[in-house]
Image (cartoon, rainbow, N blue to C red; front, top):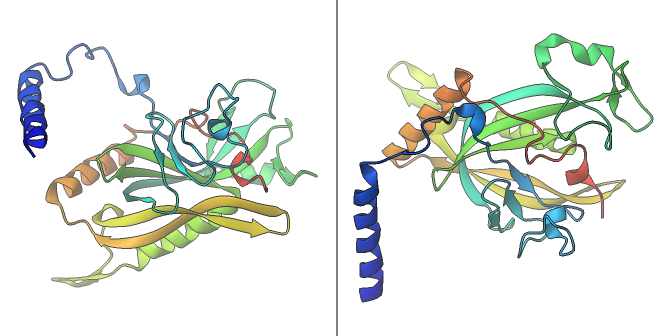
Length: 254
């Protein structure tokens, strides 16, 4: 107990020491200089799970949730709690593996109608006339229970999970002074876990989202609201390709 008390007192003292110089040395950094962490589902072919790969993360296993910036892993069965603060669906244009960089060629709003220019190829990808392919991608900007901001990208088979989550959020109704209303997405906490999913092509790990309940902490609600405002105004954007899998690596059957 004494050691715990000493550690807590030391942390408080350090915070007090550092507070006067908060963000010192970072004055020249803007939003473009920071990487938004992606929360990814690790699969059988994820390099983070391969001990022989340079990107291997100690303890990482298929089915775990992985933070691409902090390199932290979470038990997929236990999951973690998150608050959704923003949503965006786009068509991300990619070149094939081995061609170009790991960044997408372009990102197209759903309203652009570019999907009408694509045709379904033999590989079941939506191919544009230039040979590139489009991925229908749903992005969620979230706040974790330890107040970290992160991005969750859902595509391919995970779009079904996305639609279910969206319906879940939209179905919440509260009684206000003017009757029933739908509260903000960031008013509720959700549990993010991973489960095995399958079809006639095989089995893989995918997302599972369930409702926990209303946000109970006022400070957390205010933090989520502020993050949601940053997303809505465009101050925070999804930078696809940074820590994100390029194609269907998350859905590779095993």
